[in-house]
Length: 437
Image (cartoon, rainbow, N blue to C red; front, side, top):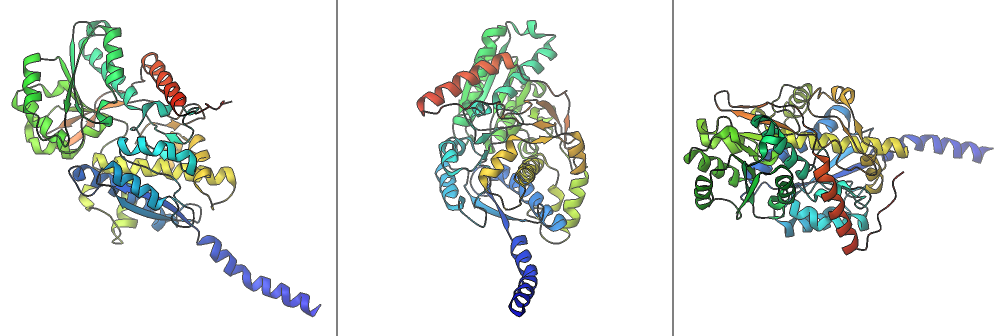
């Protein structure tokens, strides 16, 4: 009895220690940053928004369900080789190993797709990367919601049609694409070619080589060709140069539309008043007028833990990083719910992504009412809703404003292309698509 009593007392005294060990479990979340190199002006605000949201959860909530977030930055300089090196360095880091990888580069994403299924770490290429990864049957470890580049391209076609008076009015029009000459920039070409064939407009593709500072010849060609509308798939300094060059040939800015990576303050401010009216894609609101921004200021910046400048909170790319962090951590929260523990790993987070359902009510609870579109992911559909709106730059007030509805994509165009590309990938890589219930 004495021995039994001693054992019980020892166990009771050990309980707080065991609880302390359990609560110390950290969730490792790599942040693939590029704060250096030619694309740093765009990479920095995204990284700040991503990291500030993670720090907010740590400071305000003590992490996620009692588990602190271990934010692990790795500098890629938007270089594919360095990005793969980052992946290898972080995939087994910390208590949990990397729970999810956000490559923030289409080139890096392509390289990591075959690694994800082997290492059982989900890839969240939010609105970029390989578009056919929207097919969750072929790409069970890759998620590219809330919309793909192909969906966005079809939304731009619909917006143009609305301005021209209807889809039938596209016939005979000329639409140009100025694109970054990389895997990223080439993504929308097949979609636009299909749309051109269906709706009868002429499509002109104009590549711009890295990093995009030399565009004189491109815009002289646009002046000669006189397209009715010009689209841009650019990044970093390429965007700034393109907008300045467009202004120099007096191309109408309200007929110039950039992909959502070509629609930040960094892209338009260098052109001054000449950028007024420029358009870009969007899937979230600009500005810092949301409760979550106030919490970030209070719990993160007031405590000296902010990653950037306080007055830049709410810029487009800051909010892009913030929304990426929100969806990532909601997937983690869902994974904990599914598996009944906060001691999760990447394999569990994949389940959380696939069961993700962030509706308007949940957005409001997170301090982001009407900030972005509701997102629901499934086994089959890793793209989510595919909805895209357009925002426009007001140079006088120096702010972006959403100026259109959120369009649904043209699935009759994107669907067959996704199926074809996913099937080709499966064939080339000996992938047997899974069956989704």
